[in-house]
Image (cartoon, rainbow, N blue to C red; front, side, top):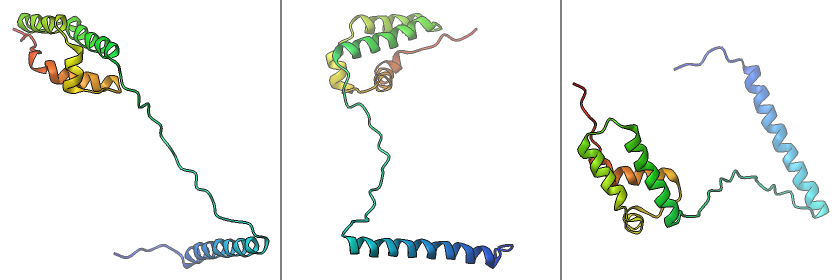
Length: 128
């Protein structure tokens, strides 16, 4: 594969810029040695900080109940599915749920765990 349309002038210009930068850096290093100054640059790094706090039982209880209530409110479920989800909501054991699926640090983690726990209970009514 051959690259065409690139002038040697552009290449020479880019090479000269790199050489100029290297010369400038060398000059700064030499001057810093004379004056005893360090020229090492500190690099700024992008840092993303995330909350490491875990949800407590009350938070998980609230999020799980909201998840189930939203499923029940949306409708379109079979009677058996609605009854199974309502029973799960009434007998929900938050400590066991956290032990099985947790710990949780976000609502999305709780939602995913809830889907894993009740996904088999969700059955949509068939349109006839």
